[in-house]
Image (cartoon, rainbow, N blue to C red):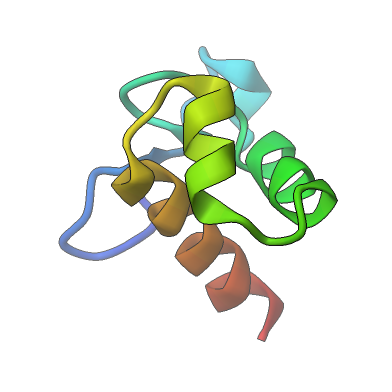
Length: 70
């Protein structure tokens, strides 16, 4: 299931990461990315470098998290 309309960046799939939100392409847990983002002083580029993923993937995870917190 793709929880964000018109985006396939984040997926909730019970067969992957027990249904927790993950990045579709890399399988990285969104919560892990958010924790790293906070630990790295909210530096998007640094998080993308650490996980070797596109900056757009980090941005999608942050948008998803903010959407669910607000």
